[in-house]
Length: 412
Image (cartoon, rainbow, N blue to C red; front, top):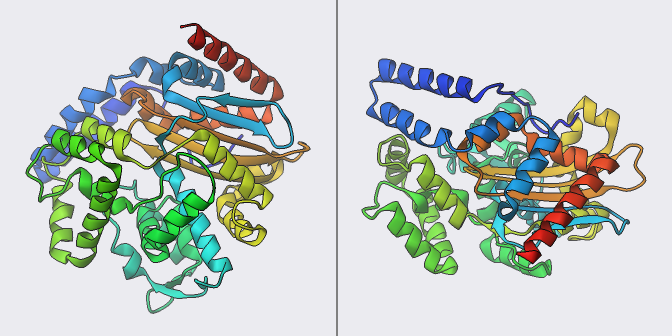
């Protein structure tokens, strides 16, 4: 059984809806917040979408059926390193990456450490990282990372932590605050040069997450989300400039930060559908082919250099901390991502009895809300990917089904 994160299985979507309703009603009783009432209607307006899939998605075979039923929303690359057999489905279509793009931030960190531009021993005050934390936007990833730092006594009496621990927060917990600290510390030009130097087509450069959120909605805006989205889509380069501009405003203005924290809990904040539209259109994009290549090159020591790639592997292979993975696998490196309606995975994995490692990238977008809520709870897409890479019969079944699907598409 794969262990990527702790899993809380939801047996029935109706139970989920009921639980959300109870929590929302309690917030009304305790806090008297009008926004809590509006949140209930927002949740109910989207949760029924894909409810039939939410109830159906229970096995890796069900996940395959979902992929076949949504052929235009899925990209999948999977192969055995050293073997000509592979799955190559919608492999070069750009799709939103969510947190999987953080692999590139890790790559630039490793490059700079290897070249002594950065020292992993440098002490960083946690206030410099906390600065980029916007509550309610990361599923408590940042507080969870800080909790681990305290438990392992990584934080000294001056509230400092060694730089080497910050990439762990980014990869292990998908901490957005840690990611933004690293992006700004590593440098925009360096990240752009890294991506262009990898010789991979159609891969976006990581940009500050706090700035992206602020372009979606902040308390200074007078236009509508639809108007903003139309403006941003007109020019990607202009949008990225806006991302960095709002990041600077956030960094330098405590007053702005305080007002924005209040705004995110107000009725002016984006609805679930508006958030999904922004994420779908504006989140950094890449291809399954590109990220499968990145993971293979990291595993083989061919992305940056053998020593830099070794640094990357130390962070990507946090999944090997689980005893079950240690019993079944020689190595397992992974980075997943999740935004509203979007799920992404990039892996390399070598089972103990397998002669070669396997790599895979699975990108899914436009997931109906009900199905998405189910998948982020039971992580069936990860179980699908694990079976795909460790079960030859299942690999062959998936490959044949997708070949038939591609053939049918060509006939159309």
